[in-house]
Image (cartoon, rainbow, N blue to C red):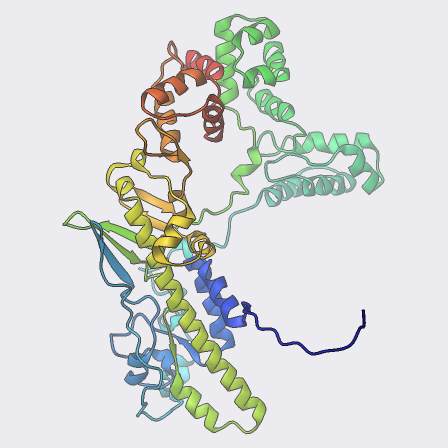
Length: 517
């Protein structure tokens, strides 16, 4: 067979991930809080983009318009404005309504560099030095007068566990060498308050004996909070019991058999501790009052409240109104007047190319934000339509749902639905839920219609919450009751759901209920 060079033409369709498409995909999976941070970065990089001042009256531009005037604000594309749709019964109204005007608006106002700072007279004489009240009035954000003062404005952060231990170490009456060992041990304390390194390793790093490390460790274990710098859970509980003067031989025997405590094996504890049943119950109550992780009282992370991306409200006619949370959506404008003025003064090709890239990037960002808002609203509206029973009657009426059903209904790809529902939350009359909460697997039922797995979990939890110490339901009993309710389910599935909800077995629940009785 002869080998010779030749030319061939082939035609094929391929998807090219342009930077603009990558940006749109990235924005789609961000929450509103993350989106705000991303837009803040774009505002720093792109001089043509400006944030709309929410405090400015309608039809007027804020101070950030750089003199663009009212026309700029009216011609700006605001993301998320009036981004709402209504769902009544099975009929959906018109798609998202957004107030977007063309960007090529005729700007009649002349460009000026005047600013409020330029118009204000400079202070002279006694007024040259700002007082605290004046500083607050000029936008410094600090002290604004006696009536507005609060210590919360000057507090920075809470003390961490290691800082708290270091302060106690500085006040301890010990030798400098022991202070050095103590500082090294404090660095090995984890967030729960436990020493995460053994004494031999610390002694090897510092070039001292293990006995010296153990002596300093004993001193650190006397610090506040009680139980800190322990090497195990047994030692942590023992330190707290010693401080209460409750570490007798019977309690020590119970601490040594924490496996029986976890299983609530009262007969086994009676045998191990050598006391009667009533004493064991009192000792277990004493253990419950102890703190197994004393360090968490200091190194707690600040809980960030969930801010919903979508609001769902009932309508008077029985339907549901779905709208985006516009308060958290960034509102931008493209200052074309500023772009025109600066382009006029561009001297070379590099400057013109930079300004052109900034304009193109700003346009793409605003289009991506608008498309993101529309897609989230479409998916949320379809979710509300599919889960109307849940919103009206509760979790027992939650329907099984997958990504393909929503994707086919709104005519988008499944991967797009997955990105839209990631890190997004919906505020409903029944609480705030992540959008992914509404996607559940299906279980067969005797009535022919599939049942949501989340609804089955809630049925299991309700049955277990209603049981008594004399009638604790085993997994087989739960399966029997669910089948009487029309749900076909296996015993191993019930056990998996129960363990996933953190519910112990029937034997452990029976012991716990008898102890609390």
